[in-house]
Image 1 (cartoon, rainbow, N blue to C red):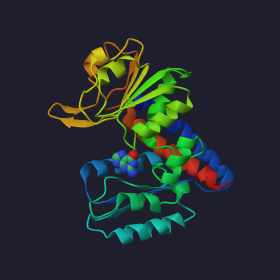
Image 2: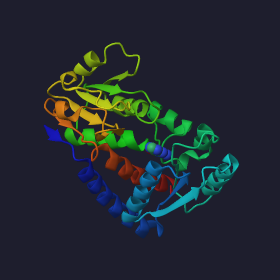
Image 3: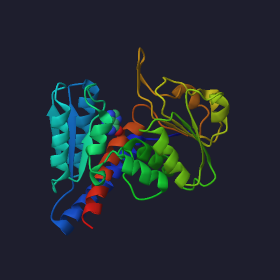
Image 4: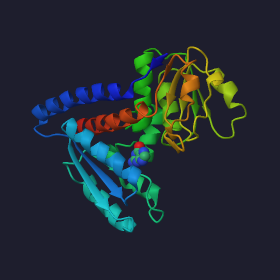
Length: 281
Ligand code: GUN
């Protein structure tokens, strides 16, 4: 079984991005900038944002975090986004989710100009991705895709089963694998026989938020299994895949932590650089 080392893959990607930033600096005499808006003091969000900032600095991006208390009015946040949309030194804008209840998430997402939407959540980017046009691609599925490609470069005709239909992961993951000529099945809580679906799969991407849902006898010998889950349990953090069982069967598997997580952040930096490059044309 191949243990897919997301930490190592992310470090390699950051190394490539660092070189690219150096070249861009020589060419344009400026570097891509990422601005993250963090509302409230939810600990996991703070940790994510700190990691994002650290990684952005490491590859040489200009990085800024704007913090608001969780009582901040929606209007203030929308005004700030407008300001950042018009700021040439900002290539990418990310508003860390989840947001406090009184702030309309969709309104915030749609306020970010699509060309700076490093999350790929704006309906314009969602539509472009599903139509096969150039777009920002959500960081987590992009990270999963790059890990899968490391194991298997030609995915044409492979059967992929996505567990979970979220806008954040399941749906964009489907688009990325369709583009690679996979036959994609997207499953969810109302799917009749999840085990039977998974047993058909050459590739499984589990992104459903149910601890250790995917069992050893759900997986064929040659299957690549990508675990997007981060679930807090009494036994610590576990994924959506039963690691001990599935690692005995699968061809390749991502661990949790140390699999998809580090790639998500590296892909955010990649998206920021892509936004910058598109803005220079
Ligand atoms: N919170 C957890 N994951 C994400 C993500 O990918 N983007 C944003 N903006 N917030 C998140």
